[in-house]
Image (cartoon, rainbow over all chains, first blue to last red; front, top):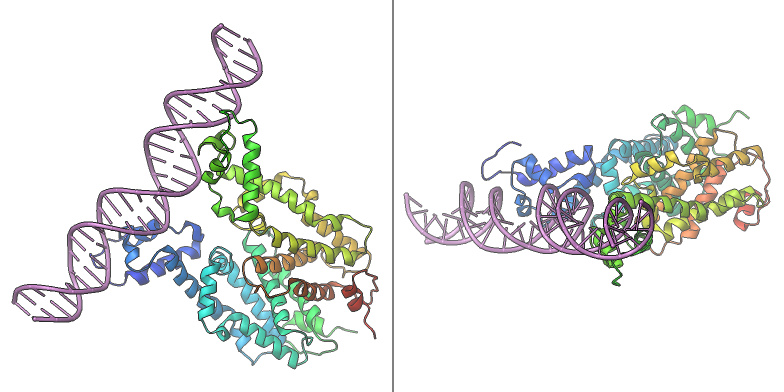
Length: 219
Length: 219
DNA sequence: TTCTTATGTTAACATTGTTCACTTAAAAAA
DNA sequence: TTTTTTAAGTGAACAATGTTAACATAAGAA
């Protein structure tokens, strides 16, 4: 609660920064305008000189949130130097890790409450940049390489995404005991998913023991 | 907005009923005490004579909601007269249908916002009655019948649940175009999941064409 | 009939997002 | 330099929300 000069300088950026830091720790519901004014040492209505209303700030947070999400979850999807199975496996792990590390942000991005803002954003943005598009492209690559069954790539991508979204949501919304070992559950989940999607009699070499083990069984 | 006598008679039940009807149509967020007082023709604070606070009403709604959920989604899990694959397939369909038909209630039951209430409820209730316990039991049956791989039944049940939760959430939280045919996506998802979980060289007879087709391939 | 208690009402409160009239100071124009 | 315009901040006020407290009513027990 530092007292600044009358004219702050970069109040808008500070609002955004404080809001993101807040959501990193507490739920978006608890982010009130009072929190922001207290943290910046300004009045309760100062924010309206920089954002039309609270939702406009949230919109900015969501925008930045998706940038962060794409940045942190898609590197393996875009890096073609690794084996495809590995890229899928590692991407799923990053996805869950993002949700676990940023539960409030994840809910903000993928929850229902601000779906209208999300949809408005995604309709403007170049769709090819989004994480889902990157996933679908990789699925297509997987089909061409003979790793995945040649079915509707959109539906296959949905299947993968919903699987990761499901386990992530269960984890961050309180359906796993702390004792549950997420890595173990993820491995089980991924093994099941990949087994269900992989084309018959395909041999893949992976650097990940789990994957090698089950893709090239002893018999 | 009917004007009743001073003493209403069964106001508590009416609050509950109105709240459930409301959530059937609109989001839980929009359920205010004013909505309830207007609908019953009582004052804003009348509800406090029947519930400690708003959360206590929500707790009752959640309790009733889980009853409804269990009732509508677990009949096939508990009915052993059908083939196991069919029971899994139909249960998953009921699960998604429940979420689609009761999106606000589903979010209330499985979302983060009232997780503390849910946990308090589930810790009191007999766990064997819950839907997840029924699922896990059916998974164990599946292992014994040789349908499913003999792995950790808890983890397998989690995998199934998270898959259904994931697709349901994506649907009701606005990630599917209206044009998407849910049935098709569900079939793809289920086929993938079952393929990944089924034990090798098991022959099952199903009454559902999709399942017969892929469990007993031509070769 | 009286007393107690359950169940309702009204008034008030703090917190929320929001708007409006005002003030300040920085930048632009003279 | 002085004046004017404009961006950026303030405080007071509003309605809506959940909640509490003091009071009112009526039903059932004594």
